[in-house]
Length: 242
Ligand code: APR
Image (cartoon, rainbow, N blue to C red; front, side, top):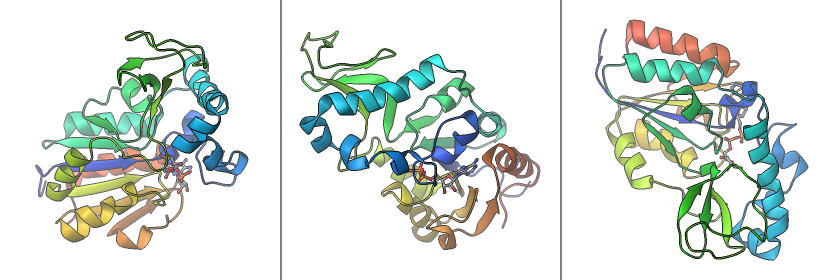
């Protein structure tokens, strides 16, 4: 296997969870075709109408907790990659679902936060959270009422762990982007960081060419549950393409 030990950074988006039964955002049946993001996914929306914002995330949280949504073959293939690749594999997900966690991914960054956590705006503490949050919910740490919010990153807020992500992008030998439209920064700029400023080979695995498609060295188009396992097996067999 040539170049067997370079590290790998994998970026995932909503497309990897689509076949698990979770909607994407910008496809024609996507979440932003039904709800306006300005109404539910900004700090301003939360301060204007907290009940509306909580209801949106309560519905999505219930879908994770109560339905039979589970990781699919694409999530599982990334766990296999982490276990079998001789170098470091870091998965950076934009998804707030817990499907990578449930599949068993260990080296994982939730850059847009986690739906199954609630954070208190009064004391800053984050807690594992499976129930609905209402304006009457009290923080288990400080007791403040009505100050809990989903531990997610809204538009206009800073994603988590950016320093660690940029350090990994700058030194990786392979950058793989899976199931993301490439329309939201900073994640949309990762391909350039890894492949233009860094020395990484870059590959896009997506249902269709994304907005940033031309920036990748290699492309595979199709459903994540099919193309991700196939790509991982090829990588483990043949290594990173020269
Ligand atoms: N397999 C692979 N790719 C798929 C599949 C599938 N089964 N189904 C859809 N896709 C692709 C779509 O073609 C699209 O390019 O997944 C991509 C999903 O794009 P978006 O809906 O824009 O989701 P994402 O890129 O994750 O959005 C980024 O936007 O609203 C925010 O915070 C939210 O993290 C999210 C961010």
